[in-house]
Length: 636
Image (tube, rainbow, N blue to C red; front, side):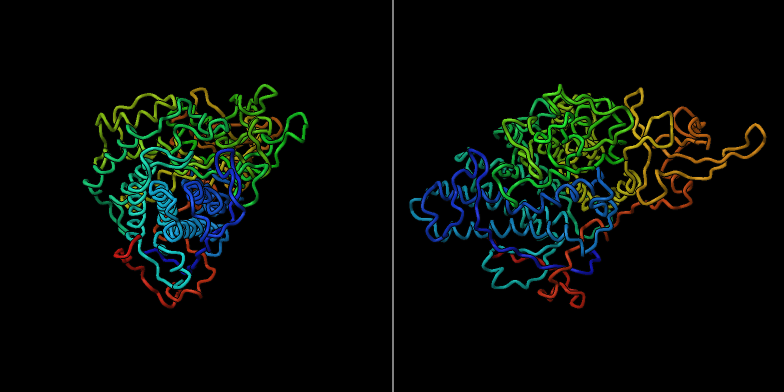
């Protein structure tokens, strides 16, 4: 059981304001509507669900999805913006956690309200097919909101009806098993209600529900709350997952994009790989609350600034999210897997033809002096996205909730099942569809670690990887705690810089074999991880010379004080016979000032927001109420 001291009750009233989006989505909708007279046609009922694709998700997308889904997975981060997500020190008073939690309940509240309105007010002029499709969409979106909640917070509050929540707001937490079962029932309902083929443009078919159901069942197959030992997944459930994946892959309307980078280009916003996505209003016409406001926190300012001073073509951004050292380590394991690396992070020496197009593209700055900032989702200048539009805190790109590559890897993992590894042809085929699309070499055997690494490279910085890690943790807690604490490396970052005068290399350097070396920078430790006053030995006159050690991921070097022509000597690492472990070197060399980030049951799940706990006496410290089973006898 998570030892959380404070909780929150947060149910957001259903939203009634609808706004415009693209030429095909949210195109003609009233600013406000009266439910009792609105649901009188197929078009009106279909339109009523479109709000579910942006406004309720706004705060979760703006401040929660990437910090929770990617920072905590150690894809990348910025220690000075939501750094506590990467340090796993988030407290119940964190307003971003509170807003994310409330945003997910806004999705749930809106889904409940639309279901209630359709069932109560839809007239005989509304066809059964359209009515069912709309209700199915609500179940699909509600299931996803609860799915994020159970993987983010664990035990959660369940509200099946907005009216019931308003009349009886004080309810206990329901346990993880119940919340996950609720997710599965929602996805099963969506599968039974959604149409086989699209009947309204950009609205999902039942294959979106099957894909979501496969993912939730894979989680359920091994999920045991509070378990401290690794245990088997349910084989029967795993077989059902494979069957669902096959339905989506072979019968669904989806196909993998040929070019990985095309997944994140505005021209391909609604592409063949998209299963479900948040859809945002046009940046120039949408208002705060229904646009993708995360963009300015994502994109580096120098990429968004016109290099020839055309301010009208620039976009105000301030992003400085960099690839984590751990993520670069994953890429270093297979230097040939460059397509996803270069599409996800800006890599020195790489040409980006989609950035600064009118100036011939952008060559990312010289080797070593720029950190590997996030590239995925970064669009450059306004004229780079034409005829679409880009503005401050608003991008034309959708936010993926699920895409087809996920289904291929779900299938491979389900076939792997409880085995240490597999050479099963179906599993390898599914895995290699994704792996080789990225230009990587075909693999002939896969293990869970291969699945983990493949997912990390495929979905890095999409706000996706942490949720899967929690699923694995509830199945194999010992395996994942070892992975979190001994395989991954947290608490350091890769910064810009030309520090240390190390041959003027800076802090991030491409090696001849295609791997990268980087300075292990500790934001709250000594500047640039230097160990000052290191005794470098006597000079020609026999006097001791003092300098400092600079810690890289693959070597440690000694610098003397004789700047600007200081002597640089590699004392451990690449090209030497001295064993080198930079985690150990940091901890010992810095006198224990480096404190590893340690994950456990107490911090893997997010704390519940502290606000409004007095409104629900079940959730106070004094009550110490244990989460209970949900009564599904009246589920709908």
